[in-house]
Image (cartoon, rainbow, N blue to C red; front, side, top):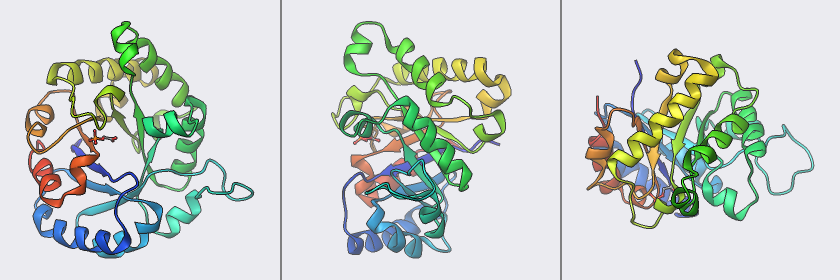
Length: 251
Ligand code: PGA
């Protein structure tokens, strides 16, 4: 049975001391959660977060993974390193990485393969820019992101992958997609996955919405039929707001 997944994306926020405190305070607020709870923290907070979350229902994720196993890749962190740190999830291809760090559909595909190899669940981000939506190119952009980003990934591997649909114009802007926009665009993505992998894989695939989701709008978004969870930026930095979003998840 597919469970909704609520994942926090802290981006480049919080030091180790704040991380330990946050996880300790979050634990009792979410111990009855009906959804999967993930917190994706900066690399330097990972070990503190994993220790603090031990024995709880909170899963810890990273925000990037190298495509190579090891070697001359200055500044990168490998799957083996994340796996040794007991990291269970990793965000791949976030729009900020696509925009500022030259991430492409091809590197997203390589990083996703690396995560799967090390049994780390990828949260693969896709989403259109404002100009794409204005020029009616949303579906075309998403189609390329999916067909190229998931190239060579088989149906079995899809059961370990989460997709986050994040319209770039809604990220960090306070402009949330309408419930219908988010739901219908996710439905389109599911149709593409269905074409590539068949209905069963597509229906079992968790596709989150992300972009200015918060404690106020989460319930309506998470109640939409095709939305299987949320990837939360700003609102995941506050344990009470994040816990409220987790409480809004559908059983
Ligand atoms: P936001 O970020 O919730 O602050 O809009 C979402 C994301 O970037 O994943």
